[in-house]
Image (cartoon, rainbow, N blue to C red):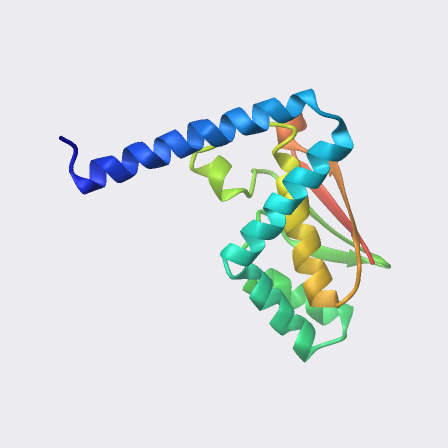
Length: 153
C-alpha cells in the first residue's frame, strides 16, 4: 500500500505522462488549432500562478509602456529580459522558461512552445489593456538555440 506522499507522486507522474500524450496528439491537427489550444493553456497558467493578477495591477497603475516593461521585468519571473524597441517589445531566452519543461514534466516540443506564447499574450494584454500580437520567432522546442518572443503593440 502506498503512503499519501507516494500516491501523490504517482498521480503527478501519471498526469505528466497524460499531458505529454495529449501534446503529442496535437501533432495530428493543423497548426492554427495547435496554437489555439496551447495558447489557452498559457492563459490558464498565467491565471493559476497569479501572474495575470500582477499584470492587471501593473495595467491599473500605469499607462506608460516603458514603465509596464520595466515592471514586468521586475515583478514577473521570465526566462529573459523584456526590452522595448519602438512599438515592439521582445525577449530572448537561452533556456526554456516553462516550469513544466524545467521540472522535466514535459519534454521540449514545438507544439508546447505555443503555451508560452499564450502566457506572454495574456500578460501583455492585461498590463497594456489592449490586444497584442505575439510572435514566437525562435523556439528551443523547435530546435533553435534560443526562444525569441516579439510582442507587437
